[in-house]
Length: 65
Image (cartoon, rainbow, N blue to C red):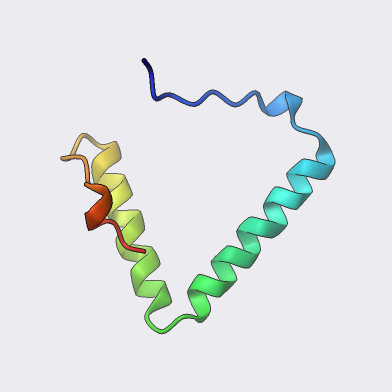
């Protein structure tokens, strides 16, 4: 069984695209407003990039909330 997710962007309506963009922006702003939010976001991004480049997969319990 594959864990790959395939999203056909041409099947997403403009309304849903706008709703998703607003939700992502709200989440980003909430994270940035948290104490050390920017540092946590940077650390999560660095860990993602390491996994993407073939680094060791991170366990769910090790992820930054």
